[in-house]
Each structure stands twice: as structure tokens, then as C-alpha cells.
Amino acid sequence: SLTTLPLLHTTTSGNVPTVEQIMDRVLVSHDWMGRNFEDFVRANQDKTDLLRLFNGVTAIVIGAHVRPSFYYALTGPIFLDAGNCWLTADERDVIDEAPDFRSAFDRDLQYSGVWRYANSMNQNIFLPFSAASRIPRDLAYLLQESGWLMYHELAHASDFVPVSVRGSLNAS
Image 1 (cartoon, rainbow, N blue to C red):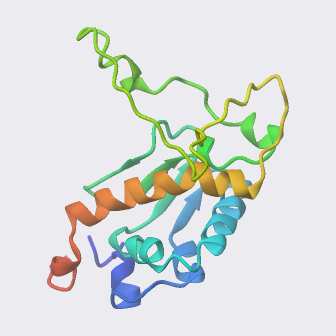
Image 2 (cartoon, one colour; image 1 turned 120 degrees about the horizontal axis):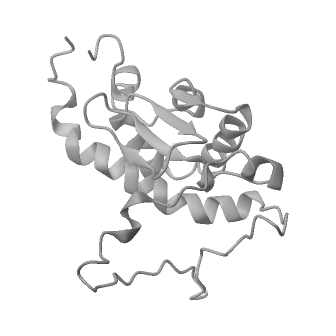
């Protein structure tokens, strides 16, 4: 129930949550995931629109076996694929590499969806990182790769429980 696991909105009264309030709702399978996620949130402190979107969730779960990322409407958390928050090759080594089960959905239709996320210089924001290369990523890359994902998953939460109804929900 929302008494046991309330929306962050309950804690913040709808105001912009602090990094600490967001981090109080984070559950991870490996400590580095929490550290990297906190670095991501701290680096985005000036984006109050993004921080305010966290009010629509009960928790943020980041796990090595979460694949793909998703919002779970029954209990209100977002589950994040740790593949979006690794910085070192050792961190990447613990992440499940199973393909996204949705990747073959368009196969029978003989259709392929076309999409592209680009930065301000019209460059693809997703770069290939071979597991054999052992190349690390930096926080700037993490901000670029994970920013769209955070807006996407948090938008699902806001769509399901809009700001206009959060104050009137029956907590039990």
C-alpha cells in the first residue's frame, strides 16, 4: 500500500526532491550502481523538471539482471537496467547481457522501427562498447546515455499517477 511504500510526492509535498530524498528510494544489486546513480542525480540538480518527475515513483531499483528498464504500475517503482549506469569494465562485467526480449517483436511484421538519439552536434549518443575492449566510460557519457532513459521511465510514472491525483490517493 501507499502507507508502506508511498510516492516520493508524499515526502516532498510535490516540491522538487533533494538528491538525498531521491537516494532514500534507491535499491541496487551492487553498491557501484547506487554511487553512479547518485553522481548522475547530483550532476542533474539544476534540472528541476527531471528531479520533480521522481515524485511519481515509490522507488528506483537498479539491478544487474533488470533487462530492459521499465515502470511497474502495481507498486510504483522504476526498474533500471544497470547497463545504463556502468563506468568501468569491471562494473560492466556483472551486468546480464541477455538481449532485450522485445528486440524480435517486429520480426514477424518484416518491419524495423527507426529511431535515433543525437546530441547538439548531430552525433549519435549511443556508442558501442565491446566487452572485450575494456574501455571505461565517464560521467559525461553516463549523463548523455541515461538522461533520455530517466525522462522516459519517469514519464510513465507521471502518466499512470498524474500530479493532479497524487494528493487524493487512498494510501491504504
